[in-house]
Image (cartoon, rainbow, N blue to C red; front, side, top):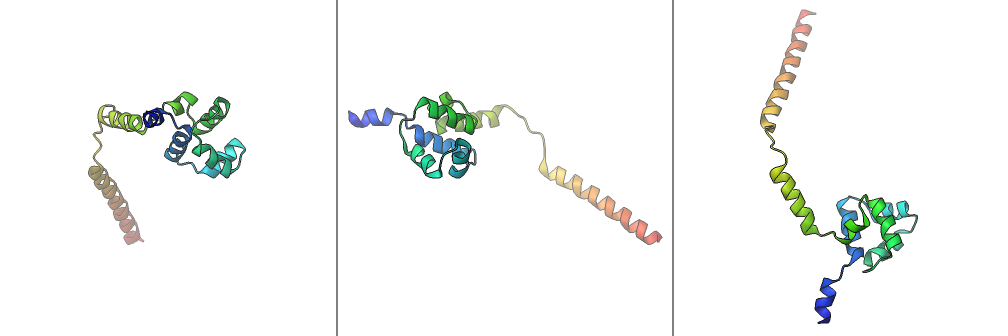
Length: 120
């Protein structure tokens, strides 16, 4: 029974760590923004429970809400990314066509340079 209880608990420190990593932020940066040491951030990320006032400060620096941290799951993130990718933007952009277009423009500019140099 104790194991089931432990798996249902929220480990806020791990969630903070993962959100920080997803934002591309180092512990040092988070520490500086919070006015604490990197070691304090490390200890914070190892904590299962975090005071609401501290959680609010961390959330603000990470650009999320405290509730966002509490309810964060990677599964939700991936679902949101997949839903966005699948349904929101129909991309008719063909990168090969764009490369050809840019190459043709570059080629035309080079031809103009050659003509100018021949005229001199």
